[in-house]
Length: 109
Image (tube, rainbow, N blue to C red; front, side, top):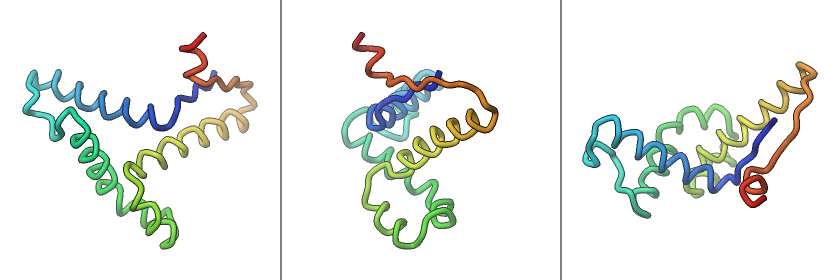
């Protein structure tokens, strides 16, 4: 089974997960580097994009890098798409039958 979740929901879920993990780990909301609100999410995206800036420069062409830097959380978009592409590629190379399922369709039904 290859479950695909809506890209935007996935990024927001990662923010929630990181925030809650830090709060639980340190048993304090003060230990999270971001507030648990819209502004905190935007800061999270900026931090994630900055963290992977050097890697992006080696992977993307200069033109794509210049365009993508204006997209919030673009590092997460790239990682998400890359993960799924590689998962499909590995399944094909190993000749493993896989079924792609949309996460949101499972939840609705």
